[in-house]
Amino acid sequence: ARSQTWRQALQRYGFGVVLVYTGIAVAVRADLGVGPLNVLQVGLARTTGTSIGAAGAIVGVTLIAAALTLRVAPGVGTLLSTFGGAAVVDIALEVVPSIEVLVLRIAAVLIGVALMSAGGGLCITAGIGNSPTDTLMLAVARRHKLRRVGRVRACIETVALVLGASLGGPIGIGTVIIGAAIGPGLQFACTVL
Image (tube, rainbow, N blue to C red; front, side, top):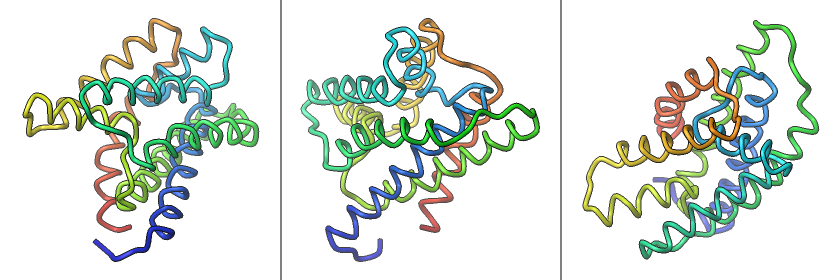
């Protein structure tokens, strides 16, 4: 890992949050389905009448609370992701236009995945905390002495997808693309950033 000051780590994480949540907004505007975790955010927003960012913050706080029950506290990055990400996605949704042409919508999903992957890589390599989802994933894995955190993550994403779908969250080919591409995209981003 490269040596960085606290300020550099915070800037790195902050820029990562901007990329991730802008990527989410681009995927929302593509209107082909969003990532499994974002299905819950969008479904909650549609059901409650809140913004997608506010719904995301509610989901984030809930995940943090669940991790706290397992005695894992959030890091600075966890809080920045929860609340900063909420603001970024709402601002980005005001700026990113709706997309009508199918080819451009598919391209937007791919751009969204690229932004989420690059941003996620920056957040992970900053080393100042995990996303709320990753915080809960690591807490559950630690509590149950599981070595394969990917299975825990898959369970969390499946629950979010099912709950989000029941709330009217958007599922489509974009959900499949994002679900399949985000892992390899993050892996690549973490090796090059």
